[in-house]
Image 1 (cartoon, each protein chain N blue to C red):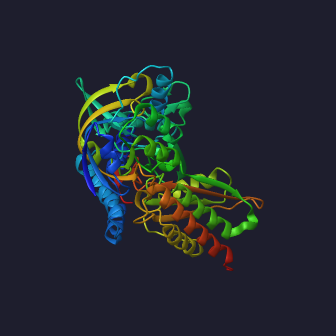
Image 2: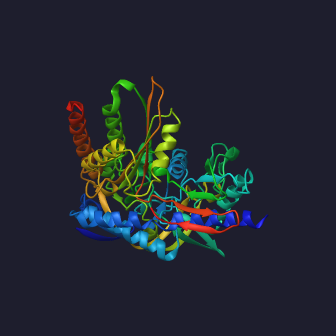
Image 3: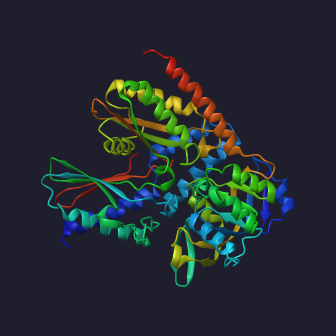
Length: 202
Length: 293
């Protein structure tokens, strides 16, 4: 199925999404990588709010190349980064801030999948490296936070996007995880190749 | 600054721009063949996105990926080329300029003071320089920026020599399987065998620069390259690790002698965006650029 969603995305819509669905998003996408996740969670623990509301919007694992022309920031290239690095705190982030869609590449693990199930969130994969295709869907840079402190790749960029995609839902809110399924298949095939090699005498 | 210094600096900036924005034709064609041979919609969507993205990059002269990598230069320096130790500063300056002009993302991070902002790092180690001395009066420069995602899935092991080729092959297959979806497949796989704990990794990185589809000149090694390329594709990681399409487009092995008690193996993996560009500069400043993969 193909879906065109608008942020804030209601939980009922997110629950409808299934692993393998194609999604496009219009609305708000906020970049956040390792440092931004840590800082936002640190604020949350101290009872303080981050400078922008992550509720119902998309969190994009991305460290873009931005360019400032006059007072305006524009996006040069903005593809996804490896999401697995965020696995160690993504579930806490989902619980604390209740984003709608986590966007990244390479997939995520059991902890994130469990949080997606519990809180009605999904993870969708944008083609890794396809930074210009991604940039094409970004219509405006609405805000930037923590730029001085964290630097261009790690800070929070708040984008307004239009039909941002195509992305593939690889973790839905029903316990499915495409990356994990493929990984299990790869491990099984690796074992049989290893056995072949072991048994061969040449 | 002499005219020749300026020519080398301008050439290095141009090489970084080409590497970041133009994927070699040979790689694009291989990706296109992968797309044509892939049946599943998920795999086709990923390869289609890559091909479209590569085309936008070439047309707009913008970096094909936001991770423009840590900058490295392979330098083959002719005996009679007039520039010697000044080269380092010239390449550092070229890196700073390319960061502003292309632009490249600042990717040099100091553990204490954070991102240096200009892709130039601590104590002169970044940009990374590999320097070979060769006969002649020219210089050959290769810019090879490499992204973090695929750099993080590099693998290194000191095998017991008794494990022999079987152990080497198993380790390489295991390394690619472990890389899985994390380094943006379809991959290019570089392998270095022998030479010690450090050289095997350098050889593996250099192996990525051998022209696309060219097997090792030693037929015995070439046979193993073919076998391993076929085997890693059987893993079925697929484009972006979603299980459909090619896992690896090419696999190269470089060899060195080893210590009798050691069998070092390095595996360096490149994402689909294997970025490099090469040029020669003669002593009188004539530049020839080579964009082939």
